[in-house]
Length: 71
Image (tube, rainbow, N blue to C red; front, side, top):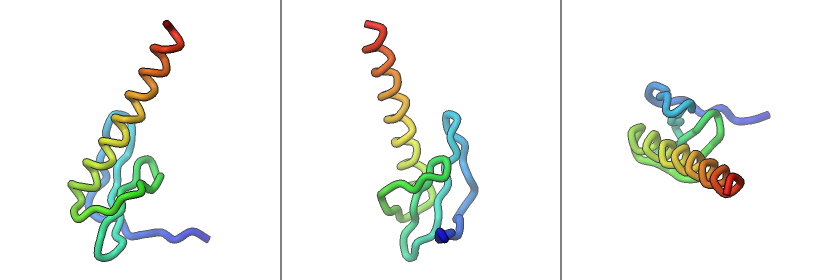
């Protein structure tokens, strides 16, 4: 049985991913497409920013991998 944490604030769509922040008092956790990120945040905005950095890094890694395969 998994623990469901209360979502704080509205979900945000970013580059095809769903970003959410969940309460883990007194901090917040960031989730990207339902996957928990490893850091703690102090606000919903900070959690979403962390999720955006993760999505950007994943997309950059995929683009670099595709470029290497094409070279």
